[in-house]
Image 1: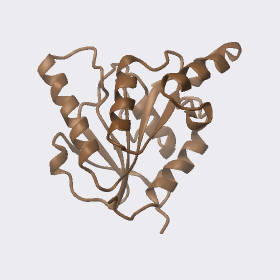
Image 2 (image 1 turned 120 degrees about the vertical axis):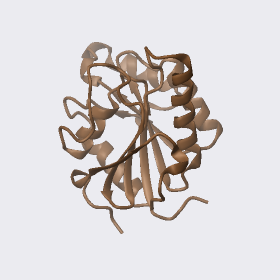
Image 3 (image 1 turned 60 degrees about the horizontal axis):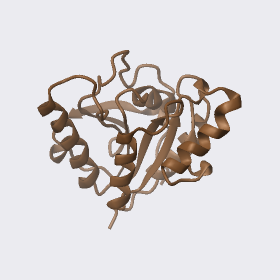
Length: 201
């Protein structure tokens, strides 16, 4: 059974406690640093300008936000890690929220880790990738903001990012949420994952 179009996605619910989320048949999640462009990425994928809230202030997403293509088929926007502001206790709570969600969803088909293509993977990005690998959780890397790379330096930066994350260049989605570069290929992958509705074992 193929899921409906991503353009049909609608806001479903917001939660701070991952254990309180209802069941779904399939979901994918987006995670990344607080200024990686997660909300813009979700809007671009769903071809909607205002589905996920975007802000000029990094770290605006501090809850688990669920968008449904169908009642039980979800796109999940997780809080950004590496908040620049906020008390330490709150930052620890957000981290626990992210980890609790990622380790507790049998219907989670893929985690998309978004890194800044211009900046490259930060220590927090590398920590997230290592943690996901250690738990054998399925994830793909998205390098966003490729439109900000100078053509003469793009290949070198691609090699650097891929090597840092122990990936090949072809393993990474090279996209620009604002310019639409690479979005069709990423959209195809998301749809393929959401069509996998057999619970993980």
